Length: 256
Image 1 (tube, rainbow, N blue to C red):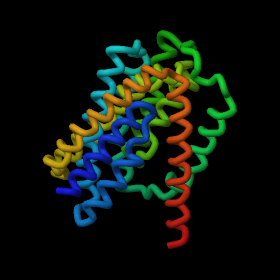
Image 2 (image 1 turned 90 degrees about the vertical axis):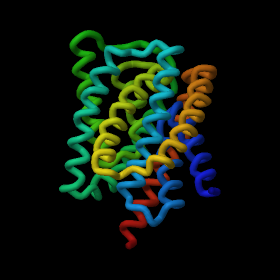
Image 3 (image 1 turned 180 degrees about the vertical axis):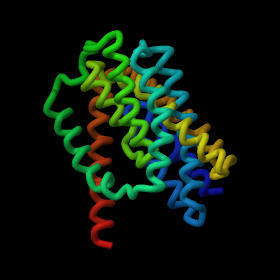
Image 4 (image 1 turned 90 degrees about the horizontal axis):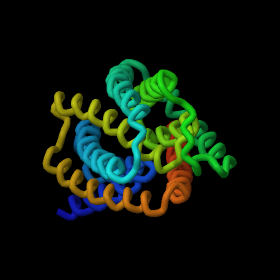
């Protein structure tokens, strides 16, 4: 019973963080693996996806009610992400992901340094694409992130926010709203596979889903209330944490 309470608390915190800047998996995935060490990893990942899609879906709905979502970019990106996440999941069963894991800390460091140096990055919502150009950029980014999410996954939400800010000219708040739409598509694609293959703990997943929804509602309210400056600061905190986490994991793998 206590384990379920701790996992519920972890899901709430993950939902809060993920609703603002992504990266909720930093909290939820280690927690679920720690408290249920005897379960198959695929089952734990499937249960994580069930909780995550509910939290991300709630955040996406809340953003759509209060922030103008750039559907012309978010929708094509979501469709491409949904399709390519399947491809990524298929690829990881045939190609080792160690190379991507070793590169991830450096990619995240570049993202953090770029965001930190560009003080005005994401402070103003000034879209730079429209029409066919916007759709093609959206499909390209959605496909790349979808494949990455299916193949590996950590930091997907944070990468999406950065890409929407950097290549579309969105402010951080609008980028976070659009990223949630794409994230729902990624999670749904993975969840369909895990559900089909029977890798789900439904009772635990639904409990964590309720907690994730609660956290996501708090997170979206904080983001909307405090605006892009708050989102930018939390984005840098989460990306910095991801750098430390993925860097530590890389060192452990090299040492083993």
